[in-house]
Image (cartoon, rainbow, N blue to C red; front, side, top):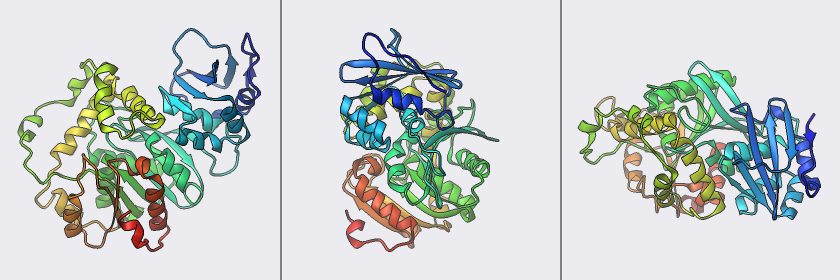
Length: 402
Protein backbone atom coordinates (compact mmCIF):
# COMPACT_ATOMS: atom_id res chain seq x y z
CA UNK A 1 0.00 0.00 0.00
CA UNK A 2 1.38 3.42 -0.91
CA UNK A 3 2.32 5.79 1.89
CA UNK A 4 1.15 9.36 1.20
CA UNK A 5 2.66 12.27 3.10
CA UNK A 6 1.23 15.77 2.68
CA UNK A 7 3.67 18.28 1.24
CA UNK A 8 4.25 21.38 3.41
CA UNK A 9 3.39 24.19 3.47
CA UNK A 10 0.36 23.28 1.34
CA UNK A 11 -1.48 19.99 1.13
CA UNK A 12 -0.67 17.93 -1.92
CA UNK A 13 -3.33 18.19 -4.65
CA UNK A 14 -5.94 15.46 -4.79
CA UNK A 15 -4.83 14.52 -8.30
CA UNK A 16 -1.30 13.57 -7.23
CA UNK A 17 -2.56 11.80 -4.11
CA UNK A 18 -4.93 9.73 -6.28
CA UNK A 19 -2.15 8.81 -8.71
CA UNK A 20 0.25 7.74 -5.96
CA UNK A 21 -2.43 5.74 -4.13
CA UNK A 22 -3.04 3.56 -7.18
CA UNK A 23 0.68 3.12 -8.02
CA UNK A 24 1.26 -0.41 -9.36
CA UNK A 25 4.81 -1.65 -8.80
CA UNK A 26 4.23 -4.50 -11.28
CA UNK A 27 3.86 -1.94 -14.10
CA UNK A 28 7.00 0.02 -13.14
CA UNK A 29 10.59 -0.96 -13.93
CA UNK A 30 12.96 0.43 -11.28
CA UNK A 31 16.53 -0.05 -12.56
CA UNK A 32 18.04 1.07 -9.24
CA UNK A 33 16.74 0.55 -5.76
CA UNK A 34 15.25 4.03 -5.54
CA UNK A 35 13.96 6.81 -7.80
CA UNK A 36 12.76 10.35 -7.16
CA UNK A 37 10.18 11.68 -9.62
CA UNK A 38 9.38 15.35 -9.15
CA UNK A 39 5.83 16.40 -10.07
CA UNK A 40 5.30 20.09 -10.71
CA UNK A 41 1.79 21.57 -10.84
CA UNK A 42 2.04 25.25 -11.70
CA UNK A 43 4.46 26.76 -9.20
CA UNK A 44 4.10 23.95 -6.64
CA UNK A 45 6.28 20.83 -6.53
CA UNK A 46 6.18 17.45 -4.84
CA UNK A 47 8.46 14.42 -4.95
CA UNK A 48 7.27 10.90 -5.59
CA UNK A 49 9.84 8.61 -3.98
CA UNK A 50 9.71 5.08 -5.36
CA UNK A 51 11.48 2.24 -3.57
CA UNK A 52 11.10 -1.53 -3.70
CA UNK A 53 7.49 -2.15 -2.71
CA UNK A 54 6.97 1.38 -1.39
CA UNK A 55 6.01 4.77 -2.84
CA UNK A 56 5.68 8.09 -1.00
CA UNK A 57 4.51 11.59 -1.91
CA UNK A 58 6.61 14.11 0.05
CA UNK A 59 7.81 17.69 0.06
CA UNK A 60 10.54 18.24 -2.55
CA UNK A 61 14.08 17.58 -1.39
CA UNK A 62 17.12 19.66 -2.21
CA UNK A 63 18.72 17.03 -4.39
CA UNK A 64 18.31 16.66 -8.14
CA UNK A 65 15.34 14.42 -9.01
CA UNK A 66 15.80 11.51 -11.39
CA UNK A 67 12.84 12.61 -13.52
CA UNK A 68 10.73 15.75 -13.73
CA UNK A 69 7.06 15.89 -14.80
CA UNK A 70 5.49 19.33 -15.12
CA UNK A 71 1.97 20.40 -16.09
CA UNK A 72 -0.67 22.88 -15.02
CA UNK A 73 -3.09 21.79 -12.25
CA UNK A 74 -5.96 21.23 -14.72
CA UNK A 75 -3.84 18.80 -16.73
CA UNK A 76 -2.92 16.88 -13.57
CA UNK A 77 -6.62 16.66 -12.73
CA UNK A 78 -7.30 15.26 -16.21
CA UNK A 79 -4.49 12.71 -15.85
CA UNK A 80 -5.85 11.57 -12.48
CA UNK A 81 -9.29 11.06 -14.05
CA UNK A 82 -7.89 9.16 -17.05
CA UNK A 83 -4.15 8.51 -17.31
CA UNK A 84 -4.50 8.01 -21.07
CA UNK A 85 -4.93 11.77 -21.15
CA UNK A 86 -1.43 11.98 -19.71
CA UNK A 87 0.06 10.46 -22.84
CA UNK A 88 -2.09 12.76 -24.95
CA UNK A 89 -0.94 15.75 -22.86
CA UNK A 90 2.67 14.64 -23.32
CA UNK A 91 2.27 14.39 -27.10
CA UNK A 92 0.67 17.83 -27.20
CA UNK A 93 3.29 19.44 -24.96
CA UNK A 94 0.98 20.17 -22.02
CA UNK A 95 2.84 17.62 -19.90
CA UNK A 96 6.62 17.81 -20.03
CA UNK A 97 8.79 14.85 -19.06
CA UNK A 98 12.48 15.64 -18.58
CA UNK A 99 15.71 13.89 -17.55
CA UNK A 100 14.48 10.29 -17.70
CA UNK A 101 11.56 9.22 -19.91
CA UNK A 102 11.84 5.65 -18.63
CA UNK A 103 10.98 6.77 -15.10
CA UNK A 104 8.68 9.65 -16.03
CA UNK A 105 6.45 7.78 -18.46
CA UNK A 106 6.82 4.68 -16.31
CA UNK A 107 5.13 6.64 -13.52
CA UNK A 108 2.17 7.29 -15.83
CA UNK A 109 2.00 3.58 -16.66
CA UNK A 110 2.16 2.56 -13.01
CA UNK A 111 -0.65 4.94 -12.01
CA UNK A 112 -3.02 4.07 -14.86
CA UNK A 113 -5.19 1.96 -12.57
CA UNK A 114 -5.58 -0.77 -15.19
CA UNK A 115 -5.30 -4.40 -14.16
CA UNK A 116 -6.63 -6.28 -17.18
CA UNK A 117 -4.75 -7.90 -20.07
CA UNK A 118 -2.83 -5.50 -22.26
CA UNK A 119 -2.27 -2.86 -19.58
CA UNK A 120 0.42 -0.25 -20.23
CA UNK A 121 3.52 -1.31 -18.30
CA UNK A 122 7.28 -1.16 -18.16
CA UNK A 123 9.22 -4.29 -17.23
CA UNK A 124 12.56 -6.07 -17.42
CA UNK A 125 12.96 -9.38 -19.27
CA UNK A 126 16.02 -11.54 -18.57
CA UNK A 127 17.32 -13.60 -21.49
CA UNK A 128 20.38 -15.66 -22.40
CA UNK A 129 21.76 -12.56 -24.15
CA UNK A 130 21.11 -10.13 -21.30
CA UNK A 131 18.28 -8.21 -19.65
CA UNK A 132 15.98 -6.13 -21.83
CA UNK A 133 13.88 -3.15 -20.73
CA UNK A 134 10.56 -3.06 -22.58
CA UNK A 135 7.22 -1.25 -22.73
CA UNK A 136 4.11 -3.34 -23.35
CA UNK A 137 0.52 -2.37 -24.10
CA UNK A 138 -2.47 -3.84 -25.88
CA UNK A 139 -3.60 -7.31 -26.92
CA UNK A 140 -3.75 -9.11 -30.22
CA UNK A 141 -1.06 -10.02 -32.73
CA UNK A 142 2.35 -9.05 -31.26
CA UNK A 143 4.33 -6.16 -32.77
CA UNK A 144 7.98 -5.80 -31.72
CA UNK A 145 9.42 -2.27 -32.11
CA UNK A 146 13.16 -1.58 -32.49
CA UNK A 147 14.58 1.93 -32.10
CA UNK A 148 17.36 3.73 -33.94
CA UNK A 149 20.99 4.48 -33.09
CA UNK A 150 21.18 6.48 -29.88
CA UNK A 151 17.44 6.15 -29.33
CA UNK A 152 15.42 4.16 -26.82
CA UNK A 153 12.06 2.42 -26.63
CA UNK A 154 10.57 5.80 -25.72
CA UNK A 155 10.86 6.89 -29.37
CA UNK A 156 7.92 4.53 -30.02
CA UNK A 157 5.56 6.01 -27.44
CA UNK A 158 3.35 7.59 -30.17
CA UNK A 159 3.40 4.27 -32.07
CA UNK A 160 2.36 2.32 -28.98
CA UNK A 161 -0.57 4.67 -28.45
CA UNK A 162 -1.61 4.30 -32.09
CA UNK A 163 -1.25 0.51 -32.40
CA UNK A 164 -2.17 -0.78 -28.92
CA UNK A 165 -5.93 -0.75 -29.57
CA UNK A 166 -5.41 -3.44 -32.24
CA UNK A 167 -2.10 -5.16 -31.36
CA UNK A 168 0.06 -6.34 -28.50
CA UNK A 169 2.83 -3.76 -28.76
CA UNK A 170 6.30 -4.37 -27.33
CA UNK A 171 8.84 -1.55 -27.61
CA UNK A 172 12.38 -2.66 -26.79
CA UNK A 173 15.58 -1.04 -25.59
CA UNK A 174 18.11 -2.90 -27.71
CA UNK A 175 21.14 -4.23 -25.84
CA UNK A 176 23.57 -1.38 -25.24
CA UNK A 177 20.85 1.29 -25.19
CA UNK A 178 18.39 2.83 -22.76
CA UNK A 179 17.85 0.66 -19.70
CA UNK A 180 18.81 -2.70 -21.20
CA UNK A 181 22.08 -4.45 -20.39
CA UNK A 182 25.27 -3.14 -21.98
CA UNK A 183 27.77 -6.04 -22.09
CA UNK A 184 31.39 -4.98 -22.51
CA UNK A 185 33.15 -6.21 -25.64
CA UNK A 186 29.94 -7.01 -27.54
CA UNK A 187 29.93 -6.21 -31.25
CA UNK A 188 26.47 -4.53 -31.11
CA UNK A 189 26.15 -5.30 -34.80
CA UNK A 190 22.95 -6.51 -36.51
CA UNK A 191 23.83 -10.20 -36.05
CA UNK A 192 24.48 -9.69 -32.32
CA UNK A 193 21.19 -7.84 -31.86
CA UNK A 194 19.26 -10.39 -33.96
CA UNK A 195 20.48 -13.26 -31.74
CA UNK A 196 19.34 -11.30 -28.71
CA UNK A 197 15.89 -10.72 -30.22
CA UNK A 198 15.48 -14.45 -30.78
CA UNK A 199 16.11 -15.02 -27.07
CA UNK A 200 13.77 -12.16 -26.15
CA UNK A 201 10.91 -13.57 -28.23
CA UNK A 202 11.47 -16.95 -26.59
CA UNK A 203 11.25 -15.43 -23.10
CA UNK A 204 8.11 -13.50 -24.07
CA UNK A 205 6.66 -16.77 -25.42
CA UNK A 206 6.08 -15.16 -28.80
CA UNK A 207 6.52 -17.61 -31.66
CA UNK A 208 5.82 -15.11 -34.44
CA UNK A 209 5.60 -11.31 -34.43
CA UNK A 210 5.38 -8.34 -36.73
CA UNK A 211 8.54 -6.21 -36.57
CA UNK A 212 8.72 -2.42 -36.81
CA UNK A 213 12.28 -1.13 -37.02
CA UNK A 214 13.43 2.46 -37.19
CA UNK A 215 16.86 3.44 -38.58
CA UNK A 216 19.41 1.10 -36.93
CA UNK A 217 16.45 -0.88 -35.61
CA UNK A 218 15.35 -1.33 -39.22
CA UNK A 219 18.73 -2.85 -40.06
CA UNK A 220 18.41 -5.18 -37.06
CA UNK A 221 14.88 -6.14 -38.16
CA UNK A 222 16.19 -6.96 -41.64
CA UNK A 223 18.98 -9.08 -40.16
CA UNK A 224 16.42 -10.98 -38.12
CA UNK A 225 14.41 -11.44 -41.30
CA UNK A 226 17.41 -12.85 -43.15
CA UNK A 227 17.93 -15.59 -40.55
CA UNK A 228 14.50 -16.03 -38.94
CA UNK A 229 11.93 -15.08 -41.56
CA UNK A 230 9.57 -17.77 -40.31
CA UNK A 231 9.21 -15.89 -37.00
CA UNK A 232 8.10 -12.64 -38.67
CA UNK A 233 4.55 -11.87 -39.72
CA UNK A 234 5.08 -8.57 -41.56
CA UNK A 235 8.04 -6.23 -41.56
CA UNK A 236 7.95 -2.41 -41.37
CA UNK A 237 11.20 -0.53 -42.01
CA UNK A 238 11.09 3.19 -41.17
CA UNK A 239 14.02 5.13 -42.68
CA UNK A 240 16.15 1.99 -42.19
CA UNK A 241 19.93 1.97 -42.02
CA UNK A 242 21.22 0.17 -45.11
CA UNK A 243 24.72 -0.58 -46.40
CA UNK A 244 26.39 2.37 -48.09
CA UNK A 245 27.02 2.07 -51.82
CA UNK A 246 29.44 4.95 -52.13
CA UNK A 247 33.12 4.67 -51.24
CA UNK A 248 33.80 4.26 -47.51
CA UNK A 249 37.15 5.98 -47.38
CA UNK A 250 37.60 5.58 -43.62
CA UNK A 251 36.72 1.87 -43.50
CA UNK A 252 40.34 0.53 -43.48
CA UNK A 253 41.20 2.74 -40.50
CA UNK A 254 37.96 2.30 -38.61
CA UNK A 255 38.40 -1.47 -38.55
CA UNK A 256 41.40 -0.96 -36.26
CA UNK A 257 39.76 1.48 -33.85
CA UNK A 258 38.14 -0.14 -30.85
CA UNK A 259 34.79 1.29 -29.67
CA UNK A 260 35.84 0.55 -26.08
CA UNK A 261 37.78 3.81 -26.24
CA UNK A 262 34.42 5.36 -25.41
CA UNK A 263 34.87 3.98 -21.90
CA UNK A 264 37.52 6.59 -21.12
CA UNK A 265 36.20 9.46 -23.23
CA UNK A 266 34.88 12.54 -21.46
CA UNK A 267 31.41 13.40 -22.80
CA UNK A 268 29.80 16.35 -21.01
CA UNK A 269 26.23 17.26 -21.91
CA UNK A 270 27.38 20.66 -23.21
CA UNK A 271 29.39 18.89 -25.93
CA UNK A 272 26.73 16.34 -26.84
CA UNK A 273 23.54 18.40 -26.92
CA UNK A 274 24.37 20.67 -29.94
CA UNK A 275 24.76 17.60 -32.18
CA UNK A 276 21.42 16.23 -31.00
CA UNK A 277 19.73 19.58 -31.65
CA UNK A 278 20.97 19.40 -35.23
CA UNK A 279 19.76 15.81 -35.63
CA UNK A 280 16.33 15.94 -33.97
CA UNK A 281 13.55 17.91 -35.69
CA UNK A 282 11.74 20.23 -33.30
CA UNK A 283 14.50 20.02 -30.70
CA UNK A 284 12.91 22.89 -28.77
CA UNK A 285 9.56 21.13 -28.44
CA UNK A 286 8.73 19.13 -25.31
CA UNK A 287 9.20 15.88 -27.25
CA UNK A 288 12.53 17.03 -28.73
CA UNK A 289 13.86 18.01 -25.32
CA UNK A 290 12.85 14.63 -23.90
CA UNK A 291 14.54 12.83 -26.80
CA UNK A 292 17.77 14.75 -26.19
CA UNK A 293 17.56 13.83 -22.50
CA UNK A 294 17.24 10.15 -23.41
CA UNK A 295 20.27 10.20 -25.70
CA UNK A 296 22.40 12.15 -23.24
CA UNK A 297 21.35 9.88 -20.36
CA UNK A 298 22.83 6.85 -22.13
CA UNK A 299 25.70 8.45 -24.04
CA UNK A 300 27.21 10.15 -21.02
CA UNK A 301 27.77 6.74 -19.39
CA UNK A 302 30.93 4.81 -20.29
CA UNK A 303 29.16 1.61 -21.35
CA UNK A 304 26.53 3.55 -23.27
CA UNK A 305 29.23 5.36 -25.27
CA UNK A 306 31.07 2.13 -26.05
CA UNK A 307 27.83 0.53 -27.30
CA UNK A 308 26.96 3.60 -29.38
CA UNK A 309 30.37 3.64 -31.07
CA UNK A 310 30.28 -0.10 -31.70
CA UNK A 311 26.82 0.11 -33.29
CA UNK A 312 27.76 3.16 -35.39
CA UNK A 313 30.95 1.41 -36.51
CA UNK A 314 28.93 -1.58 -37.70
CA UNK A 315 26.59 0.65 -39.70
CA UNK A 316 29.52 2.29 -41.48
CA UNK A 317 31.33 -1.01 -42.11
CA UNK A 318 28.25 -2.92 -43.29
CA UNK A 319 29.49 -4.73 -46.40
CA UNK A 320 27.32 -3.84 -49.42
CA UNK A 321 28.57 -6.32 -52.04
CA UNK A 322 29.38 -10.01 -52.47
CA UNK A 323 27.39 -13.14 -51.70
CA UNK A 324 27.19 -12.19 -48.01
CA UNK A 325 26.85 -8.48 -48.69
CA UNK A 326 23.77 -6.58 -47.58
CA UNK A 327 22.27 -5.94 -51.02
CA UNK A 328 22.66 -9.59 -52.07
CA UNK A 329 21.06 -10.80 -48.84
CA UNK A 330 18.21 -8.32 -49.20
CA UNK A 331 17.07 -10.21 -52.30
CA UNK A 332 16.46 -13.28 -50.08
CA UNK A 333 14.11 -11.51 -47.63
CA UNK A 334 10.86 -13.49 -47.37
CA UNK A 335 8.44 -11.58 -45.05
CA UNK A 336 6.10 -9.06 -46.66
CA UNK A 337 7.79 -5.70 -46.16
CA UNK A 338 6.89 -2.03 -46.07
CA UNK A 339 9.54 0.70 -46.30
CA UNK A 340 8.74 4.20 -45.03
CA UNK A 341 11.04 6.99 -46.26
CA UNK A 342 11.40 10.66 -45.34
CA UNK A 343 11.85 13.10 -48.21
CA UNK A 344 13.88 15.43 -45.97
CA UNK A 345 15.92 12.67 -44.32
CA UNK A 346 19.57 13.74 -43.95
CA UNK A 347 20.75 10.37 -42.59
CA UNK A 348 19.09 7.85 -44.94
CA UNK A 349 18.48 9.69 -48.23
CA UNK A 350 15.33 8.96 -50.22
CA UNK A 351 17.51 7.88 -53.17
CA UNK A 352 17.99 4.49 -51.47
CA UNK A 353 14.42 3.63 -52.42
CA UNK A 354 15.55 2.84 -55.98
CA UNK A 355 18.20 0.36 -54.79
CA UNK A 356 15.69 -1.37 -52.49
CA UNK A 357 13.13 -1.59 -55.32
CA UNK A 358 15.69 -3.37 -57.52
CA UNK A 359 16.70 -5.81 -54.78
CA UNK A 360 13.21 -6.39 -53.38
CA UNK A 361 10.62 -5.61 -56.07
CA UNK A 362 7.69 -7.03 -54.07
CA UNK A 363 8.12 -4.60 -51.16
CA UNK A 364 5.75 -1.67 -50.62
CA UNK A 365 7.08 1.88 -50.22
CA UNK A 366 5.68 5.04 -48.67
CA UNK A 367 7.22 8.49 -48.90
CA UNK A 368 6.40 11.04 -46.20
CA UNK A 369 7.21 14.72 -46.10
CA UNK A 370 9.48 14.44 -43.06
CA UNK A 371 13.04 13.80 -41.94
CA UNK A 372 14.45 10.77 -40.15
CA UNK A 373 11.68 10.31 -37.54
CA UNK A 374 8.36 9.56 -39.29
CA UNK A 375 6.61 8.40 -36.11
CA UNK A 376 7.38 11.75 -34.46
CA UNK A 377 7.27 14.18 -37.37
CA UNK A 378 4.29 12.68 -39.26
CA UNK A 379 2.61 10.42 -36.69
CA UNK A 380 -0.88 10.35 -38.20
CA UNK A 381 0.27 9.36 -41.67
CA UNK A 382 2.96 6.95 -40.48
CA UNK A 383 0.72 5.11 -38.03
CA UNK A 384 -2.20 4.96 -40.44
CA UNK A 385 -0.16 3.21 -43.09
CA UNK A 386 1.57 0.92 -40.55
CA UNK A 387 -1.78 -0.18 -39.11
CA UNK A 388 -3.28 -0.87 -42.54
CA UNK A 389 -0.19 -2.83 -43.63
CA UNK A 390 0.00 -4.96 -40.48
CA UNK A 391 -3.72 -5.73 -40.73
CA UNK A 392 -3.27 -6.87 -44.33
CA UNK A 393 -5.46 -4.12 -45.76
CA UNK A 394 -4.63 -2.45 -49.09
CA UNK A 395 -2.59 0.72 -48.81
CA UNK A 396 -4.39 3.80 -50.03
CA UNK A 397 -2.69 5.51 -52.95
CA UNK A 398 -2.91 8.84 -51.16
CA UNK A 399 -0.77 7.45 -48.35
CA UNK A 400 1.99 6.24 -50.65
CA UNK A 401 3.14 9.81 -51.31
CA UNK A 402 1.78 11.58 -48.19
